[in-house]
Image (cartoon, rainbow, N blue to C red):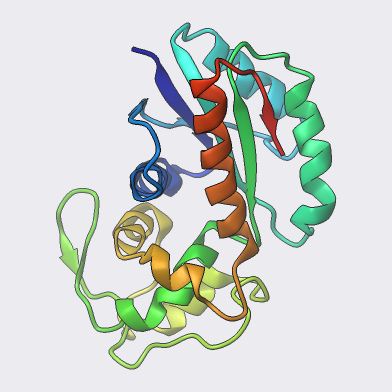
Length: 214
């Protein structure tokens, strides 16, 4: 049986993005797939980085779908995603692939769920329990409007705590409620892109396709 491969940027995103994608794939009712441990890629905002990441996955020999997930920072995904998709398309992969840009940071996925996360203890990847967000933490507004979500999360924590991606991305990801994100107002477009990309990959896989999203 082949595997799904996920390429991410940061250390913290390796486990966090795996949890996010695996849970969302199941939540969408897509056909079962065995996801490999995510790989980290460098310079994914450049064509050479996409080429290197694709070469790595191609060499595995058992890839059935590929998802590249990275932050888009200050640029607008509507403007940059088509160009990134062309870079991916030029790799002429033998399996379907997709690229999703989180605007502005991966942590934007947390913002519609902050009230749900507030006051809850969290466990990091090693099982150590820590304080999470303050009990009155909440977010109101456009989740894609904040530059510096990591710093904003720190401000919602006790004085002796700061948000650290390597410790906190996974436990906060575990608390994400997909239905809350789906009904969030304003909406979170990058989450919609992630859902569409997974449906696309599943359909292409079932049809033995080699398509590229977007």
